[in-house]
Image 1 (cartoon, rainbow, N blue to C red):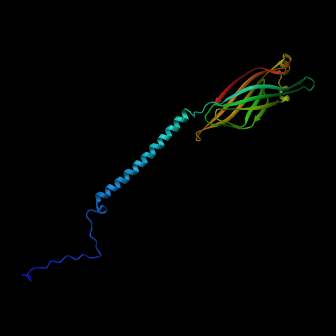
Image 2: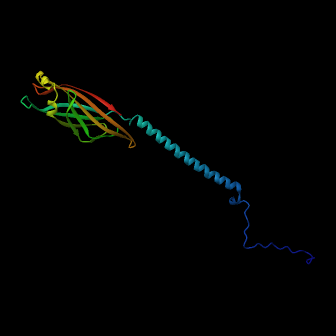
Image 3: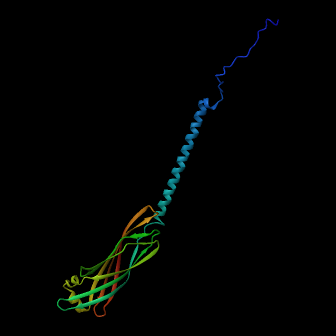
Length: 224
């Protein structure tokens, strides 16, 4: 009976081939799809979070720019006008020496600094420019006031060229006007720049008898 039994032998496995695991994730199409889906979903979530954060920051900056950091009008104030020198002679040829000192302040109400260029102050008499002076550029810090003294030497030849000068001197007073111009910019949050031009028109009376300035009136105009 032993000779009739078939001998069962195990199958030989080639050493150069490995058995493929049917449960391996690398060979499953559905597993590859799930992995790709998770990666894509993670990328979309990251992009969405970044976009939402950028939008929130932009909205916050816009709200601040329209409220707290909104550009406000700088104020120019003519604190005083002083007649430093006034000499007048009717001899031939006539001579006149007139020097006016103006104390001007620039108030910056903004939450950012106001950087301005050269200031210009002109003196007018009967519509004729008889004097002009330029002040240096500067910076008015946030919520601060900067003062400056401007001295204007009136040009005597132009003043003598006005026909009504002798009549005004005889009446004891000269009606004089001044124009001060300050141009600059306000830089908000380091990004938004607003250009500002402030002009101030003043009218005053020079007393010939007391050699002083009377009736000073000023009006300010701002262009943003």
